[in-house]
Image 1 (cartoon, rainbow, N blue to C red):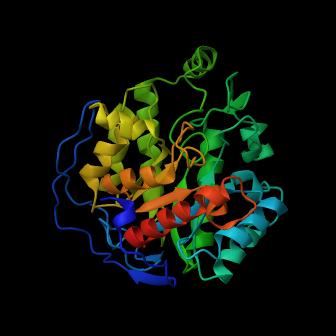
Image 2 (spheres, one colour; image 1 turned 90 degrees about the vertical axis):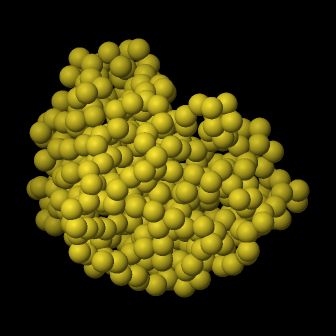
Length: 401
């Protein structure tokens, strides 16, 4: 379905919807998918029902699971600079195509350590969410224990860094020292934070979903630079193997499900090694059984090209999305801001939106640049591309709410 052919509509007001909390009666089991090839063509319903409350942005024409979150969102990371806040206020929040925001929250911004009372201080998160809530927009929260860039260790509280085992890793977009995620010091503290995050959000009526990073950033891999030989050897010395990472990832999915949040939970899937979707397949199987949604944060123009060549998308997400569509919410996030000429590695917005809809995604997350190009006359390329950018965003919002 071409994005430009969709009926145009606006995001609409935020409403809270309810879904059944009654578990399905003895559904068939979705066994872990261990092949790197395409998975089976059908999937059973989850054994765990989705949470009962989420914020919605109205109806759409292409939503596989209308009982789950959907819409077009901006993604931002804390701490927000005054310049970024001004961009959001001017270009993003007022745009009718924008359903709301996904705020990447750093663990350390909230957790001040056990010596401080209260230990968890959510005021900075309140401030980041306030403009969106005032505009009647949906707010999603994505929490990271370690950042996915060179300064990523700033996301981990100092009291945890002082006691946890570390991996030394010299690679692009990767901290030089990285906590060992399965170290009990890290796990106990991060799980306590997740429990507090659920308590913080449970009473909020305008939350769409929650996402907790399993590894780097809000994703499921040890570090963006993991495959660099020196970095990979460091992780292997700490005990990481593909089987160990798969077991660890599934344990994190199970823990997140055990929190019983009011709002839906979504987990990202990734490849540990290039071309091997074994972990992604297994995590997807476990997540669907737990009623947890699936996300890919790697959308670029390479993935439509891979499909055209008969190759799988990164971490097999395209096939996995089509398999589980309608059972859990499916989220796509671009790897970086798009390029209206399609010359960057990410590609252009209309092409990616069309492709994502074809894979049954119903939550799309873009960087604020997309709305800046559509709405800011001072933006580079505005004169040539603002109308086509606006049309693509508006049509996508018509499709997914």
